[in-house]
Image (cartoon, rainbow, N blue to C red; front, side, top):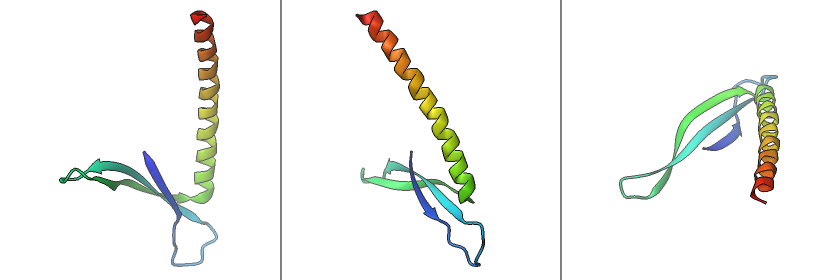
Length: 79
């Protein structure tokens, strides 16, 4: 699923910055053409968004390391 991330505009000068994350997906319209639609919109403080992304990155990197080890074992078996 694609995302569009942008700074959330604010009416007042606030010390906390926010981001707006639009989760997008591509669908076919009635004419069969691809169209991009917004699935959902999230707003959160930018510091929270950074922390969540860093946490997710650590998990994904660990999964990638595990998959690389699995592939190495499969290749050993294959010969």
